[in-house]
Amino acid sequence: AEKVRLFCVGDPAQSIYRFRGAEFSHMMEFERIFGDSIAFALSLNYRSYQEILDVSNWLLSCSSYSYRNNLVANRGRNGNLVRLEDFENQSDECSWIADQVVGYQEQKIPLSDIMVLYRSSYEAKTLEAELIRRKIPYRFIGGLVLTKSAHVRDVFALLRLVRNSTDDLAWMRYLQLFPRIGEITAERIVGNLQDANSVVQALQGAVGEGHPSVEALSAAMKAGPNPQKCIKAVIQQLSPLLAERYDHWKQRKQDLELLEKVARTYTSLGQFIDDFTLEPMHGTQLSNKSNDDALTLITVHSAKGTEAPICFVASAVPAQYPHFRSLGNLEAEEEERRVLYVALTRAKNELIITRYAKARNAMWVDSSPAVGQAYFLESVPPDLVQTNLHGYTNRGISSLSSLQDIY
Image 1 (tube, rainbow, N blue to C red):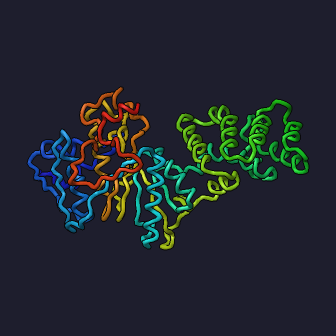
Image 2: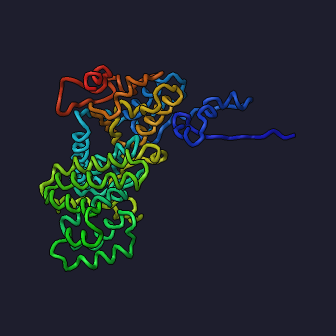
């Protein structure tokens, strides 16, 4: 019988979908699994400059696994080392990234030439808030846009009523949050509120004294136009209701905490509402027209197969590379190395890695010891990167011992 002929192309260093059933060993052990086979290593890279590939190659060389990848750039070198930018906290990191994006715009570089990669969609939220505040157009791939999340819209419904008690759309969303108030009942209540001198008293007359909708509205109104006080009151009042209404409340609550944090930078409630409800273009609004220019925010798992002239690998902190949930399982940890490798190799011309000292979940590095490397970027060879410290000089991020002083 005629022998079966099989031809496969793949990169084991980009195997990052184990959670979907992908088996890393199929490529790494191809010659053993399929006897009488020949493997050809494709090491010539047509995307990136060699400086970017040098860091990517170094990352794989630190693995306990033996990768055949040692990429050589067809484009050669451009003289620009990979930049490693260290910050004290995530807010400073995100503000700096936004500054860089504005700088690129001033150089007439299209926003579509810039990609910001995150390990998880939640880590991108702080930058997203900064982009919204600065009205920088963006598309978010691999995560839900912050202001399109249902729980965030619910909070803004009540904030909008504090600013304008005749906002019928806000009333309809707000009232239907509460049990036994459907669309028809909400419409009837809104109709009765139109000519009321006091919407709090009118709402109390419609739903009864002590009703949670009255209590929440009253607390928000009393907090007044101060953005920080008002959103704090709104979140405090609505959180029990939203926690029952939505799953994954712990993560959703963090979104609201982020909004409260951002509100501290505003003096006008109206401006805060406008910035977060009339936000820049995002993924669901953009068409394929050439004049749709927007920054790309993307998770690494969504970025495989994509590229951009300028890439930021943001929040490249301990507990993200490798992800804290992978610690203690060598196979899972090594897949995280490949996730970082995919992120680094998306860049064509310029690669900027940013990180900050006060990393969320960094304590997992100690409580769940890694089998392999606890942090992949702990000791990047200084000749491969240009390192810059922002805001402090006494302690960097690359040393895990320094993190123990923080937590």
